[in-house]
Image (cartoon, rainbow, N blue to C red; front, side, top):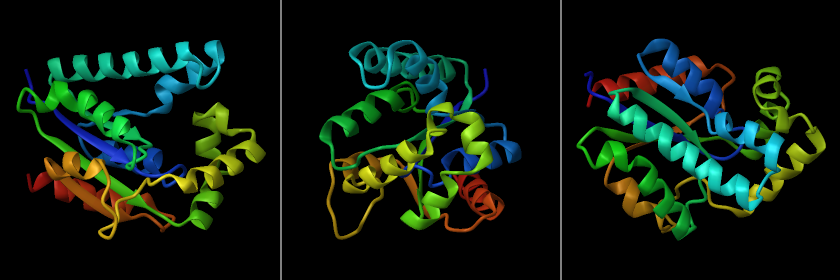
Length: 195
């Protein structure tokens, strides 16, 4: 069995997680697991945020990560994470446990971009093709604005419940304002190779 590794790629909506994740996977043996891989089919059946949606979304993600760890898969998972919520930090800790608890490497990569950049990306063709729920652009733009009240990027001047978890693993924070995901992906690949 190959030695698996987990990379959690996180940041606010439309920061470029999917695009950068694809670029990293194109350059490595990592397999891409988008957060929308579980969101989209569940929304079609249950609607967003319903009890059934929340339960199954969490269960599906956990089971996929468990099987990926057990099979030695190099997995890159994209995640929108409210760093100020203690429950979110607990959930992420349980999500990465199949890798972390068996001594497999876990790394966190954080992408940062300003709201104007993200609003532009929110209308990108690739994003709309991969994420049908984002095609209602009025709702999707409003959602980006609403998420600004959440803390989705680290800040050295702000302590959050996520800090303890991030400090236990490798953590890379990258500016992703540019239009080409290649340079950011190359930085991530080089950083991972130094492990």
